[in-house]
Length: 102
Ligand SMILES: [Zn+2]
Ligand SMILES: [Zn+2]
Image (tube, rainbow, N blue to C red; front, side):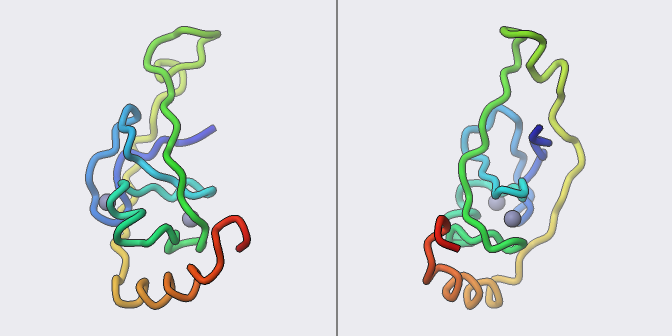
C-alpha cells in the first residue's frame, strides 16, 4: 500500500492525498509535478527511475473500507533537497535511456 507521503522531497510543498500533481517513483520517492518533471527531468535522484502521477485514495468509504479513514496518508515528512548541479549531470546521463528501458 502506498504511504501517501505528505510533502515534496525537494521543495517541501504540501502534497495532500487529494493532490493530483503529486508524483512518485516505484519506491514512492515523492515530488511535486514541477520538481519531478521540470527540475529533476523525470529522473528520481534516489533510484534513477521515472515518475508517475500518484493515484488518489478515496476520502469516502465507497467500497469495503478501502479509504483514507481506514488507511490514512503518512504524516512522516521526508525533505532532502537535491544538489541541482550534480543532478543535472546525473539526469542527462540517465535520460539517454527511457524509464521503461532502464
Ligand atoms: Zn517540489
Ligand atoms: Zn526513487
